[in-house]
Length: 139
Ligand code: ZN
Image (cartoon, rainbow, N blue to C red; front, side, top):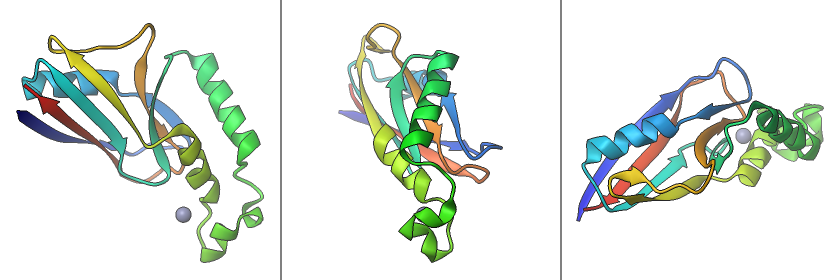
């Protein structure tokens, strides 16, 4: 069995945002040389997510509005976590909803997606460098 590891770095200029990272994951699969296996893609920070859904801008705005309804950023003092001096309690909650990682099958050297599936990085406390881990195993 072969394995391959790669990190992607992000530094979004905004507090929240979604980035389609499918091309970077496809590139990592090519670099790995693995034809049959699995790829794990996970956010390495507890205020960011990796998830799979449609690359449609209206849907992304819907996600953002929905998350702000469930866990609004303000008022900051509504969250116990922010008594630590942080202001990112909402980002921890948003990450929990949108998930930490995805696993995708690799078949014949390609990501074996269902219809319209794309992989996204979800940032909920941006404006600083953050990482995503890609780990590929197979043969
Ligand atoms: Zn925090």
